[in-house]
Image (tube, rainbow, N blue to C red):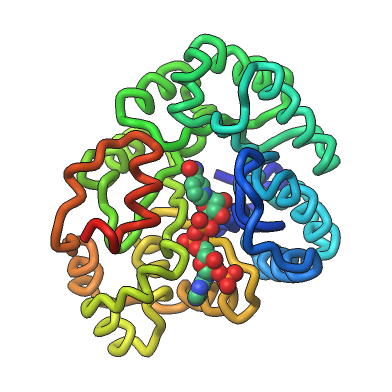
Length: 304
Ligand SMILES: NC(=O)c1ccc[n+]([C@@H]2O[C@H](COP(=O)([O-])OP(=O)(O)OC[C@H]3O[C@@H](n4cnc5c(N)ncnc54)[C@H](OP(=O)(O)O)[C@@H]3O)[C@@H](O)[C@H]2O)c1
């Protein structure tokens, strides 16, 4: 997959939830820093070659997309050199009009006439009906308003149907993978995507640094062996295995640390150790509905 200007996608992408404060439109906004911090750090990521992201008009009560636009200007990188996904989440979209309003706002705030991909979740398909959402996406594709379409937090059966419908316009499935939470690997979702040539993009790959803070022995041993940090071991493993993790950061030192994760290779048996690792209690009591995954990812320590 490439940007419209022909640049291959970077191995790591830019996470944008939390830019301009944490919270969707239907939640209170927390952890908000000064706008200049986000502009500075996003511009640093873009200038360093990270060239794909998913944005949502609902993130940070709308701040996230406008801050991204300012950061893009500051970076001096052309919009055509980036692959921008517009994500539509059902939680703060009560009706079809609000979906269409969000789509229009995405283009006007970013001053662009296309999205590289438009993403919907399985829960959005269920909330409004597949036919309605497929029609919206088909119109966007036909009008040249989106180059591709993507899906998030879906079961294999939804991924297969989406592929049958959108064929080679289906860019990516965005799902969760972390050192501890392997639900999508163990339920075959990642394998389905690989089989269908759909990119596996990973959300919350560092579990917001909670994985590192957990002090897993295997991660710490590998970090010591390769003189890297646990977060670098995690990102290196995911990229080596063909996943595309998206990481959010508003801290330059963290961004540089994450970029460094691409500059080394581990021996095959160490990748296998990580791949084979399962946390003590498999998360079997969780189903694949979106909220359950988010709940498990955020509160893994509570359940294990
Ligand atoms: N499709 C979906 O349903 C879905 C769900 C959740 C998220 N997402 C997307 O996925 C993106 C990534 O997920 P996320 O932001 O929730 O989690 P994440 O990328 O795993 O973690 C981000 C957090 O970790 C910290 N961090 C990053 N690098 C670090 C490092 N090297 N050392 C220490 N701390 C570090 C950041 O703090 P600092 O700012 O201090 O660096 C930030 O608080 C989101 O931004 C969003 O775009 C999609």
